[in-house]
Image (spheres, protein in one colour):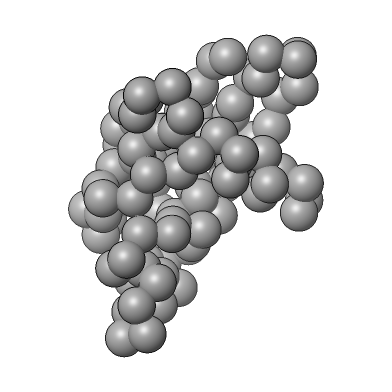
Length: 93
Ligand SMILES: [Zn+2]
């Protein structure tokens, strides 16, 4: 599996073990964040960030099940995205 942040952080590509490659805009990843902050009723991720400005500035593997991203401009870094979640995002198109 390979993770690639491209276009100055505005896109994320994942090359899966089966050879499939999925690419998302950084804003799609940011908006799918499932952390408590983003899912609490007072805080909608769509309001936290401007889609066109969203960038992924860092990506770290979390164990063997997911990835933690650092986003700009909001500096959000607490969400963990599981591989299953990312594959699900790809299937939504
Ligand atoms: Zn979050």
